[in-house]
Amino acid sequence: MARLRYNVLHETRYAYARPVSLSRQMLHLTPRETPRQITLEHAVDIDPVPTERRARRDYFGNLVDSFTVSAAHDELVVVADSTVEVTGREAADSPASPSWERVRDRLHQVGPAPLLEPCQFLYASPHIEPLAVLARYGRLDFHRGRPLFEAASALMQRIHRDFEFDPEATTVSTPLETLLKERRGVCQDFAHFMIGCLRALGLPARYVSGYLLTRPPPGKPRLIGADASHAWVSVFCPGTGWIDFDPTNCVQPDDQHITVGWGRDFSDVTPMRGVILGGGEHTIEVCVTVTPEAPADRTTSARALEPE
Image (cartoon, rainbow, N blue to C red):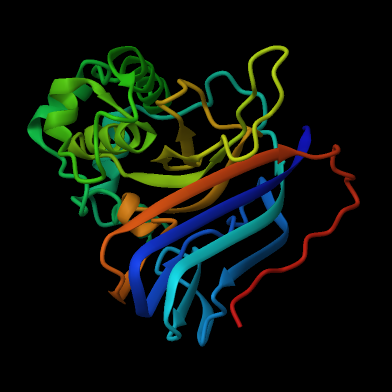
């Protein structure tokens, strides 16, 4: 299987109308270690220099960098620079999976401990309410006895057909009912919507945050800062584990998707969130650049990135 190496530069710049006297922030910007992904290098530069800073793992096992800036400032700049290796998934057009009803019923019974972890992704979360209208939408693909993988793939494909990508159509707080009515949004919306459909049918699904390699039009150069954070969906199947689906691009994530973390929805893996004292009105500028590097040497060893 191919192993690809990428450099990811994620720059966030806040400019404030009035000085900020105190800023406390939490970052989800460290790529996660998975069976198919290793982080070779990772660094986060912060200006002004934090007065306090620490790394930890959150409830879901994602690496979180928290910091405090107590010096007065009118601009805050955070630059995350990561180098990762991603291994392509094994070629399999349709991995064997039980019927979706069997998966649903098994997860709603008292069972072994390994099934407890996915069960936490069955229920409502801050941005996802598993509504009856979502169950009705999803059930069109979840026929009686249909294998879970086949049904989830069909749902992904229908969302891709039914919804139009429009970065001006929604905000982070747009309800899923509005999204279903308007049929326009961004990757975060489509991931939330697919997760809502799956949970409404009694199936565990989680939100995955990361990056996607984008390619410029033929004959055009790659533009620095033209990429963006991305989001997709992971569905649990007993015996197989978590299976990823990208409804925005209608693909199964492979070696061009870079995982940062996962949670119940966007609120669990927000790239940067926090509180400030002062500041008044502000502007924010985010630039993401994903750059392919030379093919990885199979003898490369990863440097462990653990909280202090």
